[in-house]
Image (cartoon, rainbow, N blue to C red; front, side, top):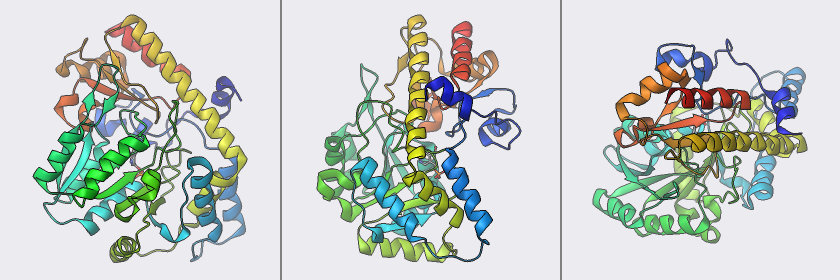
Length: 395
Ligand SMILES: Cc1ncc(COP(=O)(O)O)c(C=O)c1O
């Protein structure tokens, strides 16, 4: 299916559906008439095979108490093997209601009040709030923003920060939201060997694993150095980004080390007492095994890439000093407007002049990113054209 056909078939006008992105603008922007390119979900319906799996389950079964369906476990294992060359043992799998809750539980289970938690900034803001809400210190190690607008790790600064603050946990975003970087084996090997040397536990948030739009493949942290770091590693994922099902509350938490896993599960038992989520399991099993879902994903990525290319080419042709990061992964464009706008002009420019609700740069690490915006490209090309034109007409 080409991009126009995909959009015709799957694009959905979500206004009036209680969508946080469309109807929840009021929360952050105090109005509801902006073109929303902020919350990271998509304006596309998921593959039909997933919808059918959910409907079929509900029609054929009461929603009584259940046990984990082995087909769901097999589906997750097969997805990681088939798509990501990553071999997972079924016993490593546990869960959380979503990735951020999994991260919050790990923070509570594996660190103490005032412990230091490292991230590479700019980064998804919920890492920061999960740590600070739990009264942990967040240590943001800025990445370098290079000539080609790519981001890279300053390994010396990373190690120095770990030593200085006695960091206990590193939350890695793989691929990286908001900068769109897809981490290589070599980069993760360097990061993780520093963590290993200083006994830092690693969480690899792999929720964007399937959203690869560049040439570099996604590499799970579980496979780095042939699994050399799995004893201090917790990987998390879910189908929510890949198949636009964020309100289906289920995330995979993958913990190879038995002691860590038992500790996580013991903490989870204290705060959460429920059976498996049958609807999520039915959906995940369909998503990870049905050929239609993989074809949908391929077509979706073509739409996202077309949107990025359109916006990138059109903006740079007119505003050559914009700094747009290469989007190798995610569906999020990360753009620095500092050549054209002052930090104090950004909100007014996007909201009042352009009529766009972006994610503002400061949400990803504070004032240093105040001239940046993150724009969500998982929508129709038509919406991306409207946004691009609005930027060009008003700057
Ligand atoms: C890197 C990253 N992790 C986690 C989440 C949220 O995931 P969940 O809804 O499963 O908590 C997002 C959503 O944007 C994200 O970008």
